[in-house]
Length: 312
Ligand code: DGY
Image 1 (cartoon, rainbow, N blue to C red):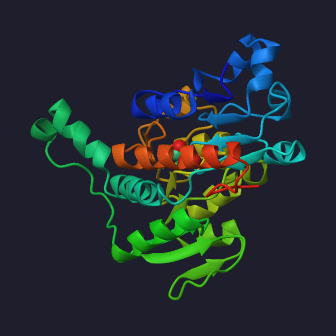
Image 2: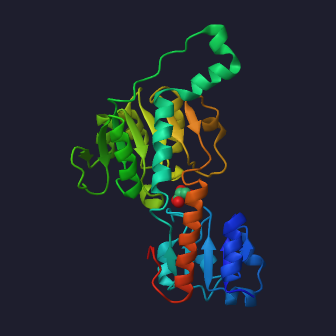
Image 3: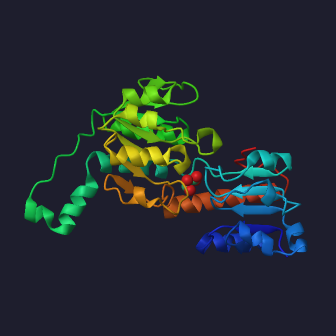
């Protein structure tokens, strides 16, 4: 039996590398732990984890000799890091290598909604362009005031890119950063009041649950667009559905959803919501870099070394 489990949808080169370098046993989800014999579970010292199902203390206790959980992804909100620390388990993630891709996607989604790409594409495909002529006008991107929620590594990449589109950058984060020319707001409602659109780039987890509330959406106003590339949990989804349905805000573009991959049908049917299936980092190059970093972390954790990107 192996000392390494790869839990998640590992396929292709990633699966091959985990099998070759670690003799890893690949299983699809945490449920598979219950199917392993007690002897097999005792052997496991390292887990390569990919997924959003909660990896909590109860799951960790099924692997009594676990030393390292190497997460595939920068966001590790699915892993109970406090429970891992209590058990002496190192948790790692894959930051930085995906910043550009996630920021590119966020900017693309914002422009798509401000300029109404989806309505335009529908008019061409349906023949409405030829039959009915011009569509309602969209809004101008340059000159807009954009509020970036979260000024971590990805938030900064997003703001840098948006500034190049001649927008005015505002941001909210736990503390003010060294960001000359950009306006800091301590409170998310104040930020929403000051800007046209909001791009969400804060971490998920209990601390930020429902951070983008009905109050934030109301403060953004009826011309506002909300883009979320972070985690579905950071938006109050009920409030968002209501705000999109009654015109409190103009539109949203969402790469992440509460309870994904299932999406609330009340949300997915809305024409002013542009959905993507959590593809922020989904490019060949970036996924390869994330896999390589995950394996370096896993190797270091198994060897009792400090991993390149630990989170605890
Ligand atoms: C992450 O890395 O956390 C992103 O959401 C991509 O999965």
